Length: 325
Image (cartoon, rainbow, N blue to C red; front, side, top):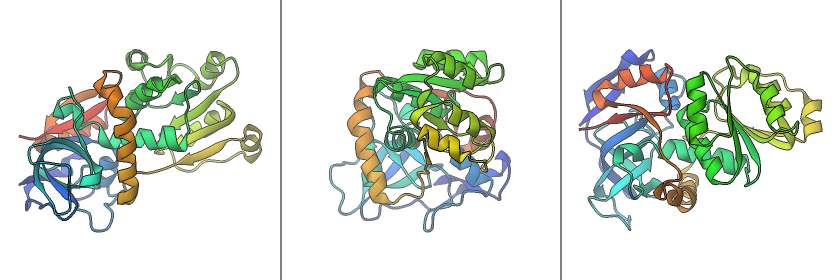
């Protein structure tokens, strides 16, 4: 099969198509003939040599795929060859075939094509576990989502709105802010022109938000804490603006704030299976009813993975997806 290999740590140009052995479906796995694969920020970190795959996982990048079931490993029930599927994987998505643990596979949502379905697993699982589990966002509460125009951001806006929460977002242009508001944000702040802390305080009547979802870190930390309501939660999923901050312990105590965060890839199979079940139970009906959609900026053929990564490093709106065949 054709797969994408990281020739060496570096820029997008180090992603090259190569011929690799086709994987087989081991016990408990499905072999998926890949239709499309989502491109995510962890893939960029792996390309740069900063996020190696877990032990025993293929070096082929790619954490989410969609396609059809090609073969079924022993012990797997509930699936048939030819079933349309999307799956969360620990690696191997940038390829014509990908083996996935069956508990991390979900039926493609009704009414959604497989290219769109490829943009679901990594992103939706990440948002679910961080916003609704670690962040404990409830209906009637409010959330500030940084990077509102990213794949994570566009998903978080929609899921929080579908849950019945007030949603505020930040983005880097008037066009991106407008897109966030079309997706369900009550107000989006252009962080290049306006102080999001001032805006959040005004929009909440000085109360602040209950949850902040942040992928920036660095200089945003103090403002995030100041933007919280009493008892609020800050959830980190990345630290693109810097991973070290100074913590004002007194301010944290006065706010009774919770500061947390998580990664998805290193979690064990049981935890990922649990997440898959929750996402299918709660989110799949929203997708199939049209309340939530995947937002895709651009698709590229598998062989053009380098171009996809170059776009991910540039301004874009929503997800970038590789198509196969």
